[in-house]
Length: 281
Image 1 (cartoon, helix red, strand yellow):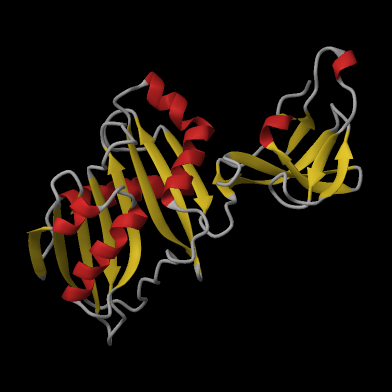
Image 2: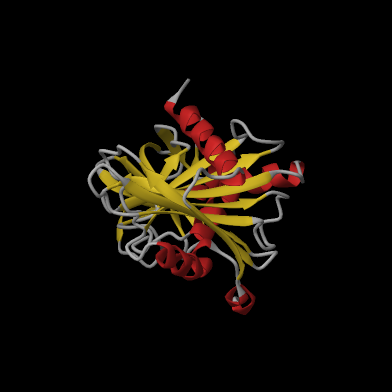
């Protein structure tokens, strides 16, 4: 089994654990009036409420991961559940943990916490507050990468967004689409929260500058930019049908589109993904 699918399976198991009951420790379910005051229900907008409950449980609790679930595929409505994992600093060989589940539709918060014994490596804090790409932008990118088409052809598709540790002071957003029930996702999309780099799916190694079957239309050249976005400085240009090496691609929340870093003919720069052909012309 590939690392990609092992990770997807672990996420599915995590969601099942969230749904089930925890073992020992502290539990409560409360009405949360502050939820009614929110204009939107995203991971970011609800975080303050979840953190307040977590730090009531343990004052030094920090965010370790987060999951949001849209079970009916309607991503514009309130999510069914937003689950935040909070942990505490390691003390000896023990580390506290708690799941804070927020139910926007019901206006309730549920906390389920307890200690983990004999833990030698504490769960690292999630670099949530330094994210440049937020959860809504990650979802927009996933929709543009095939998620929207999947939902439209399968209206009952569930959508899950997970924020998890990627490295020191780094995190990634993963968006999973399931056409029916838990298990391996039908579509997975992952983006680096600090840089916007698309981690999955990986782009093809090669592409061609947009090329028309009508030679008379293959005139001029397409500009390459120093960084993603038309407001950046240009670094050169390439004529239509030029084969390029693809280095990476990112999602730009400002432009609402993907940008691809390419190189060819001693020119290296960024170009909008829509201006590339990934099949030989």
